[in-house]
Length: 263
Ligand code: IPD
Ligand code: CA
Ligand code: CA
Image 1 (cartoon, rainbow, N blue to C red):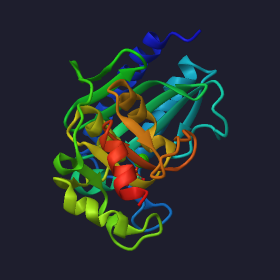
Image 2: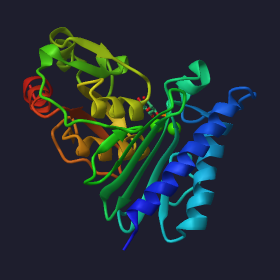
Image 3: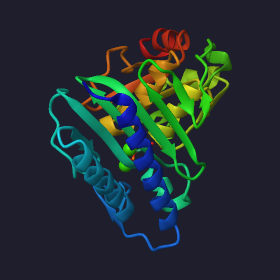
Image 4: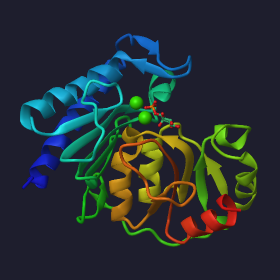
């Protein structure tokens, strides 16, 4: 049986070391390339960081599989065994343009069940972490269970892309939510947006398309504080596929789903 405490200790050591390497890279010149389109950026630090984790994991846990955004890990098509799901830099555009609002995200799953979630906001030195069943933390602070809130008092993260004509959703469903909620925010990093829902800085997060490395860690944190995550249709999340997301506090999730998205 896996020793989750030990895996957690190692993963935390590695994420902190990787964060230090990223901070040091601020004084060096980045090499920036584009991927699927001119706004889909990748840097040498995204690749270096993913390779850094892969080397450590392969040396220490050769039987574990790795699903990484930059493709240096394994081709993962089933949830069997232990899988590390890694986004070396979530929010690469922010990393390149702002040197802030990005994070390293690592979710570790066994047979499709989230066991460990780590999201490291490198610049603010905030490590969000959870082991399944043991609560979620931001650094040393235990995150309390989320309290109920209604749409009219909620701050909701939505990327502006989904509020204009787009291929993911009829944006007119979201317009009333913009009017009815207390405020809309967008940070440009799904991992931090998930961590912010888990720690109560946001009440909900709605997005049309996230990949496993964007959400794997955040879902573990969210479960520990009693948050709810489904697709925008209310369906269960498939952890090794792309999904749309409605992530919210209990109650608010139902209110948004029934009152806005399913209308
Ligand atoms: C992106 C960010 C962004 C989200 C995109 C992701 P990346 O990740 O999380 O907030 O809207 O869907 O692809 O490319 O910066 O790792
Ligand atoms: Ca990402
Ligand atoms: Ca990334």
